[in-house]
Length: 480
Image (cartoon, rainbow, N blue to C red):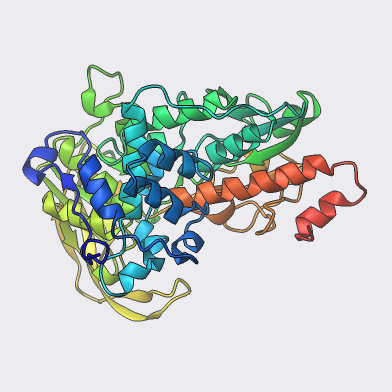
């Protein structure tokens, strides 16, 4: 009984800071079987579990944890995969502290059960045992669905539809599938071998993936549906288009968007140049603008790529930083400096056009803005300069417009996201659904996965009732 009521969660080992900044190897080392069972023992196995309501893909959390308690690790991962095809990924990068773990009853008096760590453990355990078991395929329905984008939303939607008997094809613009999982999140936080392993599982469910296929250029969405026989489509192209501040000097050499910086490092392995073909120039002094997970990833990647000093510049206070607490702590452990209440106003270059300084201004916080966070206000006359060799701008992303621009009748909002019913994910074009960041704006991996799962449900409904009069209008209005 004493172990069951243990209020402190079981710690997870990780590489020491002085070692990890010299390598792109994974920082968090995961649980051992003994540690996993000890942590699982803390779960109260609630009969009305609030943690499930906090999970965007509705994993049966008490059931999989109960199986861990019994030492049935394979049974536990099978239980998770009933709801989520990407447990090794979600166990690593999802903000469980704001979702399932935030709802955990144990967390009322102590630390919540480490649900994400347990999810990661059983997924890794399954892989360590050899061939991953694939559920039997259902009878084919003889209908084709096109998935545009192979990030977490696309992969989840595809796997759900494949399990229902549809012929599913994913079209990916880049040369490797995975979307943000492959190009955006660094190796030390999400090893690419693990992403490839999860994608292999989705393919073994019967999903076909075409890479180097830019929908809107290689083929339009209309051509896929009118000429290639796809009866429904799911647009999940994410939000990978960089945002800039529009201040003087942003076009100087040595200034990257976080998208380019991380894509070069993660997808193209620039940190291994010349073994890999893509180089990246990282100077001794690096400034990263922003304070979300992407900014932390960029800062920590810069250290590993050879920077001697990395500074994060953020216009609000630490309280308003949007990155996960553990990612901020990891960055600080590794030597990243945080300059809060500070904002760039211009960049200064040398005679060759390379950035050499960033001029910043000190800020104070005013009343809350539309985001609910206190609005940053410049303090007049407080400008000063920071010497710099490289700048990475990580202030958010917006959706790539290519699919909406090449698909007549597919409406978008003023933010570039696709207009869709929030319940059914149906768009203004019949047969076309959407989800993930292209629908919601930049969000988390697990929210994108949950979006893909929801869309699959209504794609199945649409294709089952397609011949009924007025069916699309009902789905678009959420009247089903």
